[in-house]
Each structure stands twice: as C-alpha cells, then as structure tokens.
Length: 500
Image (cartoon, rainbow, N blue to C red; front, side, top):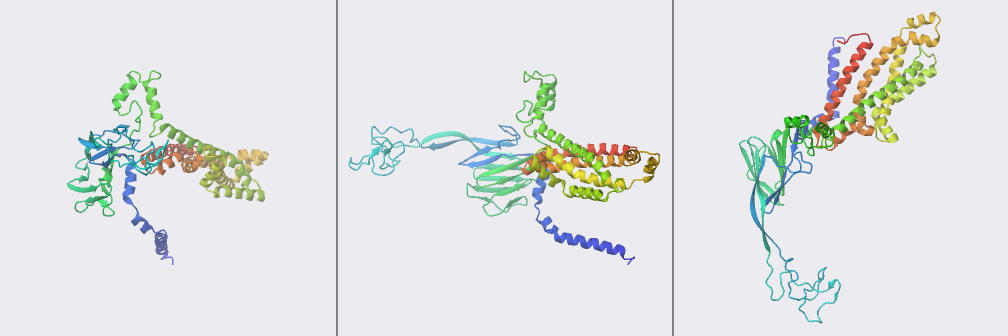
C-alpha cells in the first residue's frame, strides 16, 4: 500500500475529474457553445461597429443609420459609396380634382357615403341626407363628373439611391442593388437574388463564410474581424468593425469631435474661445467628463464609491471585531459562555455571503453605497472576529506574565503584554481584506449596493456595448493593482520586513 499510494492518489483524482466531467456535462456544453458569438464579444472589447441599414424599396434603396451612430447625426462614411438616379413615380391626383364636379353633388359628406344610390338617380331614389352627408351610395372612384375629363395620376420625378457599394477593407465588399446583392470576399463572389418581402435566393452553392438556415431565409455573410452582413428580403444589415473605442474622449455633441489631436491641442492652448463664458480647456474637460457615450464622470464617481465602500466597511468591521475578539479568546476572557456565544455570532455573520447581506440591506436601505458598506461591515466583522480571536489564543504568555509580575493592572497587562504581539497581525489582515473588499464591492454593486458594479452590470445587460465593459474592467484592475501594492508595502513594514 505504501508503494501504491502515489498511484492510488493519482487514480482517485482522475476518477473525480471524470465524474465531474460527466456530472456537469462539460463535453456537451463545450460542443454546443456558440463560439462565433464569443469571438464577437471579445472583438467588441477592442473595437466598435458602424451599422448602416439598406432597405429595399420600389426600384430604389433607402440608407439609414441607428439614432446614436458613432459617426454622428449625418453619417457619410467614405467606405459606403452610393449611386443615384432620377426615377419617375405617379401618384393619384384625385385630391386636386376635388370640387370640380360642375355643381353636381358627388353624393358624399365629409365622412363619405355609406352605400345607397348614386347622385344622378331620381329624387325618390336618393338617400336621405344629414349634416354628416348622405347615408346613401358612393359613385365609383374612377368616374368623373359629366363633361369633365377622366382623372389621371400625376407624374413626379425624384432622385433616389439605386446602388450602394460597401467596402469592408481589402477585396471585401458588398454591392447592393434593388433585387440583387453581390458579396465579394477575397477571390470569391456570392450573388443573391432578392425578391422583396418574399425570399433571398443564392446563385449557386454558399461558400464557407456564408450561411442560410432555410431556403428563402436571410443569408449571413462573415468577413472575420472586418464585420458581417445580414441579407434579408427587405433590407441588408451591415456591421462594419473598426479597431479602437469610438468617441472615447469627445462625443458627437462636442465642439472638438472629429478633430485631430493636434488641432484640439492648438484650440485648447492658443485658440479663441469657443464659448465666451469659459476657456477652451474648461470646455474640453467638461466635454470629456460629460461624454454621453462613455459617461466618464459617472464611472469615476461610481469607482470612488466602490473604494470608499471597501475602506469604510473594512475599518468599521476592524474596530468592532477588535474588542469582541478579546472577549472571544479563551486565554484572555476565561468565560466559556461568552467565548462560545461570540464565536457562534462570528460564525453567523461570516456564514451568510456578502452578496446575500447586500441583497438584504438593499431592501432595507434602498440602492446605494450604504447597503454596500453594511454588507462589507457585517461579513468582515465575523471574519475579523474569528481571525483576531485565534491570533490572541496563540500568543506567547511569557510577555503577558512578565507585565503581570511587576504589579500591572489587568488593562495594562493586555495593553503592554498582548497588543504589541497581535497588532501587526491584526493590521496586516485588515489591509489584506481592504484590498480584497475592493474587488468584492464591485460584485455587490451589481445587485444595487452602489459603486461601479451597477454600471458594469448595466453595460453587460445591454449585450452590445462590450467596449464599455472593457473600460470599466480595466479601471477596476488598475484600482485593485494599486491597492494591492499599497497593502503589500504596509504589511511588510508592519511585520518588520523591508519591501523586496
């Protein structure tokens, strides 16, 4: 058995992993995962999309962009080239001929006729009339009054888009015409016949980069990182991707939007005031802080709330757990009932997860930082109480006996014989949990406990602005990194070691 111990341990671990693989159906989950969507989400962290829609109309195309397009209110991208033409259309001129009946009554009131005899019937056959017009018949719309020429539709000429050429970089492009779409990727071209509001039919077999779930259904074409398009029977949805974060510094409302960095710096330093009431530097800072797309000011404020939540909750928990730990330690307070009562109290506080406490206090106090501080305070009080009391129970009694031997009071014995031994350990543990609570405050913020967690959850829930998620995650990583280094430095100094 001694010789087989290593083999048996390895076999046990292997069997456990196989059991976990079967229990959680990991193979099925991995095989059934939509990795294309996962790739798109990852791409959204470092890029953004411009989304033109090209609708099919009668022998024409209508191009539109979303309301909040990253290109502003009037997008005119260079990679979307359109061709226009004059198209003649006819409309009914019945409205122009109204009142041209030569004095003859049409048999209709302002609400129209509801049936009955025409106006040229005998008086006995005519319907009774009221202020709403006759309750009688309606003459055929195509007939005109006696002696009047037949009404013909009026002709109008308008300029419409008849062709759109969308470039997706390199040889990738989409050529859209009424009833026909040609998609080119590299040296392959896919031609699709579009019958408006009926079907989309490819000419030939679909290449690997195109898919269609059913005959006549929409066709999805993919261009890798450059984007993709959905060709439907009534429109073409293009998703053109660009590297970077759109409008990160200035949004489309800003006076500095769309200008190169050199021009912005020149305006800030030497240019004439854009707004007489404040300098260009103040205007630029206001535009950055109040950026409508990225909401920098609100994100920074929520991040500060997260830091304050972690700090306040940790400090309050440390202050309360410090005296309670002395009462819970058996060697400090020789009262078994008090020891056990306080230790069970600590177990209760830390056995309820911080997220559950956050939900409870959100219901009690409403959404906001107070709920987050309370959740951290309750959880850490239980954790600190246990850690502090265990540290007190493991102190060296010789130092305490030495202080007691000189006739010191019980309070002085604890002050000079116990506190110097455990204070560095207490502070070290508190600093570690302060750094850890900075991360935890982000999670509990997602349930309404304030801080940047709520902003992060809102950005993730939209399932579109993953670049905003990346921005907030990077800010959280920076804050955690900074506080981790500060906490490590302070702990090393408190326990008597120099930072290495």
